Figure 1 (cartoon, rainbow, N blue to C red):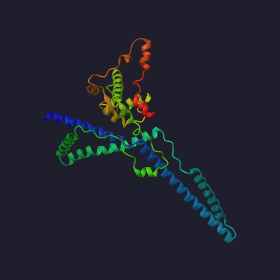
Figure 2: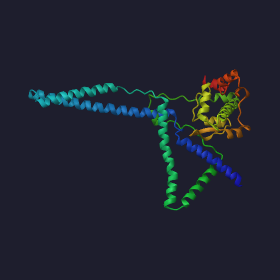
Figure 3: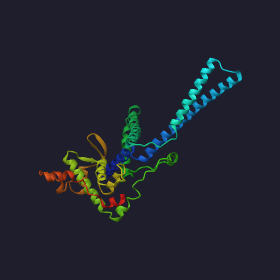
Figure 4: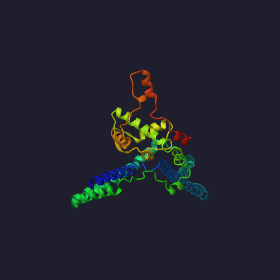
Length: 325
């Protein structure tokens, strides 16, 4: 009985770690939501700047009008009032020019660096939130009693056993309705969820087999280079270079890999952590160690070297070409 329980706890812990890593990295926030939040912040800053310049221009115009009325009433102005009138006119002109320069708000063109920077900020805040839990356990164990740590460990183990072999649905959360309403100028991002189901429906087994072959080749190549795993983002980049899975992202692609029977977990390659496929775990799933096909094995002849360097990691999947077309 202890064996199945330990295995269940290990699988539950793996699912919990994946879910926490997915959330802490900000991977549940879509690029569209980040784009809309950036645009919303800039739109609000633009509206504040316009309101401030309009207020200052109105105040300067009001002061100038008041001084002109005094001049008409008294038949002129003293030197100090003349200087104040000239200053008010200049201020009104300057703020009026600022209003013209601000103009109407236009949606800025954001590059992937803006999205990546905002996602890193989200991840930094969420990682700080995650550190509060172990910090509270350590503080409670130090201040109150050492049993706080014991009960925390037991609670974590119980959560792992309860979760068992039930993975979380790691996807993108929908964009909030109030954010959509506040940013009508931003065009919605078209995702691949509308077109991708047509591919597997035609042949549900072929695309999975082709995907497994691609991953096996990529992991085998990485193993030859001394790496025991490959990040999901690198696998997706190799596929997209040949026109496959163009609608997928490094956040949604792990679910596609799992659907194809490929194990995905958090790996660390050259100091960088992220979701990836390990060499040994893939071998267990395939039933054999990942290996290169014969035509991709490096040879000493020049022709075969050139062929090995020019052949892509995988051939295009039939359903992907139809879906993206």
